[in-house]
Length: 311
Image (cartoon, rainbow, N blue to C red; front, side, top):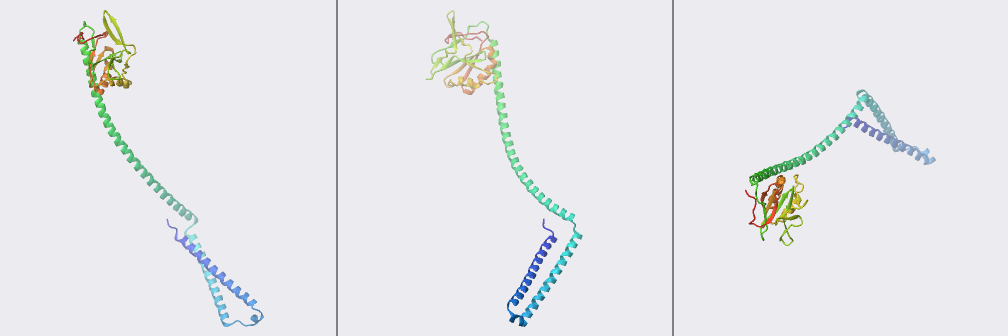
């Protein structure tokens, strides 16, 4: 906001008064200097009458001094008149209000700039939020697709469990225990799923050979027949919350999808666990053949000519 015109006029008048006072002082100084010089010129100078030129110059200086005094007096009177007029037109309270108005205007301008800066920052933040929201929408869409795929896989696994249960019910009560096929170069790998634990009957050696997993198997003989079952606590736990997926994957990953077919012998207490095992086998690329058995069934060692579970 611009300053009032009265304030500008006051400053100009003060400058003019200072100039006039300085001029008057200079004239007085010159006059005194002339008097001193005349006194110092000696007796001859004092007895000598001033020349016409000096007298004319002195008169001119005196006239200038009187004119300067007159102008100074006039200007002082004008200033007094102006101050009196201003005091009548603008009182002290109005001056304080004008000053407060100027400060308020300055504060308003500062707040306006601050608000503009905050709005700019908010705009940048909103753009970042929009980008994040767009990314979240894409991720949510991908998650929905994966969820639908998992739901389809879960339905498929449940369907297989139902088929296993139906197959178990359809089997004969009086059957010979199943035989494990151990022919050389056979591509069938037996897995035992019992008590919620998965145990491999065969392991793959360092050179890629198929070797009996004797460290985790227990072999017993009755009436000349060799029976095999997993040792207590052997194999990998198949947790229903899928917390042991990595261990199951390591067990299955040792087998080659191009060479091995996994035959999973499933006891009734592990039907629900088979869904997780089947998922890992499918992800590994291996083919599998589920073989549900009745409770209490034992596996015997034999060859392909030995009896298997009847339908």
